Length: 185
Image 1 (cartoon, rainbow, N blue to C red):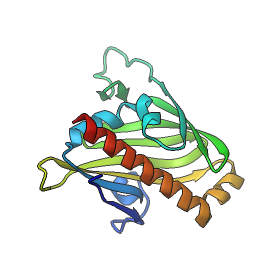
Image 2: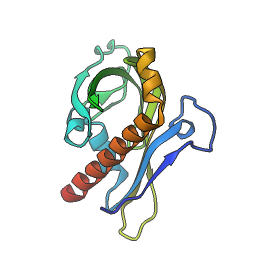
Image 3: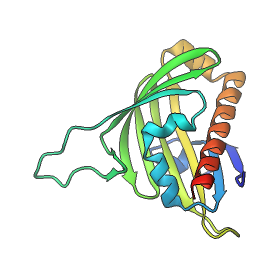
């Protein structure tokens, strides 16, 4: 594995609509992979269970087609603004379902969403090119600002044990994603 990780509060500002200003859940730098390759994989949401620990199911609910008078939403790898993504999660013996709305796509740099059910708040993937000895190197950063529904689960989700568990699952998931991409490219 050729990555490194960082977690914690991003010092660039308070929670907002920008991934650069939300709490950084996980960040990983991967040598030998372009951000275009990362973007293709992250926009292929139905493949998330291949690398996402604790992720049991994903269902993409496409947005209705735009009226013919508009240019339409951004589309990439089957994902477009306005799509809903339903996630079935399992951690610490508990199951939870979350639905998100894709709000912004800027290939190959950014995917953002807003939680519709199972959680409230926002999240995003920010992909950056970084210099590296192996040539192509990209950094992927998952950031989010959320609360989980119902409230009793939110209280549990913010306890140190559960936060550590989620952080561990995310770290393992991104390592698995990076390793899969390294084998493919």
